[in-house]
Structures are given as structure tokens and as C-alpha cells.
Length: 214
Image (cartoon, rainbow, N blue to C red):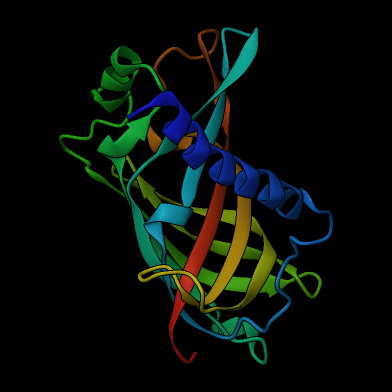
């Protein structure tokens, strides 16, 4: 293609891009949807993440994640006692951005994924604190040990999003849940106490697609 012809084709394209940039950057266009949340939702694994942060040698923190998350949750704003959640994580999907470290974390020293491949959370109760926050109690099974833990949950947004292509579009809701736990509760005590911290911060960002009523 001759340079002049290529230039004539690029100029309109670049002009359209420049015109679009102000619209994308315009303030006030992004907002959290304020719709009701009651219903049963299937977790969207492409927009859900489970993050953990742990202290390293008393110097700094580092964060990893699990890439395989699935489950459902049900919400009833008229009767929060009926709220429930079930989440299953494939332990071998752990990812800290460094393959040799991930291999150690999958080994018998930590998650022992060959013998305990799944991490499960099954809720046992929800207590609202404010309109959009509450405490979600449940049984966490990790490394073959089951313990009761409590997540602090905050609603982010909810509403119909019809313009997204399947399987993401529909009526959606989103939440962030946080908790702190001791890994020694679950028999994971490698490199304690000086190598890695015992306390682990867990942050779960959840987005779900509505599949039915409460």
C-alpha cells in the first residue's frame, strides 16, 4: 500500500479515536447501580477474585490470588436471615506471579493440593450492620480442616446490565468481603514464626448473575 493511501485511511481513524477519548474520560459517567439485590446469583468467575495478603520475613507484604472460583449466593432484603452463600475454590489455582513459589504453596508444606484439592466456604448466617454492610458467618474448609470464620461484607452495586454480551449480561450484583484468619488454624504452619506471618488478610471481590428468586 502506498504511503499516501495509508495516510488517508489512518487520519479518519485517528480522528475518531481522539473524539472518543473525551467521552471516555468525561467525569460523572461511571456510577454504582443502586438496584435491589434480592435473588439467587451464580458467581461470575471472570469478574470474581479471591486475594490473600501475607507478611514476608517481617519486612513487607505480598499478595496472591486463586484463579478458579465458583459458587452461588442468595439474598433476601426482607429477611436477611435467609441470606446464604456457597463458594468452591480450586486450591491448585493459586497464583502469586512466581511459578517456583506457587509450586511450594501447592506442596505438602502449605495447601497440599494433591490431597486437599478444594477450598470450600458454606455460610451459616448473616447479620446486617447497615443498609449495605453486614457480617457473614460460615464454615471454611481448608487443608482438610473446617473452622468458623466471619466475613465483613459490603455491597458495591446491583442492577440490570443488558448491554453486556452473554454470559456476563443480565441482572448483576457485586460485593466485597474481607476477613483475617490464622493459617495455623488450618494446620498450615510452615516458616512460622519468622519467615511468613501467621495472620492472612483475605479479600473476596464477588460479582454474580441473577438466576432466580430468593
